Length: 220
Image (cartoon, rainbow, N blue to C red):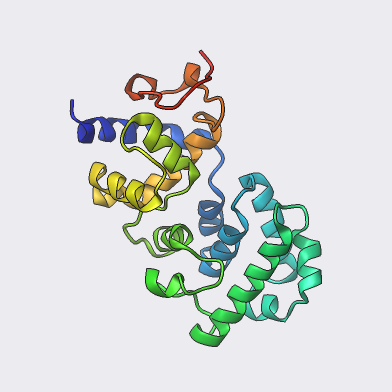
């Protein structure tokens, strides 16, 4: 069985497992609100924070300010107070305010639908742009975060943690019509089973396909 066939089997398994776990935060806000701006802000808040905390903080923020206009007008210190319980709250408060102001200035408050324009927004890199394109606009994109990089390396699909290299590798392995789902499935798997330090290999549904590259300690 070659890598492409292996990847397809893995994808089928992760798809079946996905409903067991908490929905990734960007997917959650897309499904609940169908509002690209809220998905964007929640995704900007999410780095280095658990999805449960990001979801909680984003919900609290949206109670006070849920449009680019409202967040842009909100005092930075008040934003910091709302976002305080999440990591790097000062940086993230400034980013959500700057992003809101940018959208108002250049896009009349709307979230753009191209990677090029999305990546001009303060706080938005290729990963966040791809998440927005896939979640909100149904575009064929694979957003590469730490879970995707860990997954691709442990499986033996790729060597190294260059995001663009991992993205291109996964694009070559998985069918294009499934690209927008890849991040969802892998993030859920990474948050619950393929943990960063000590993965739960004893309950992993795809263990037989995993080479465990770089894994020094795991649940047997």
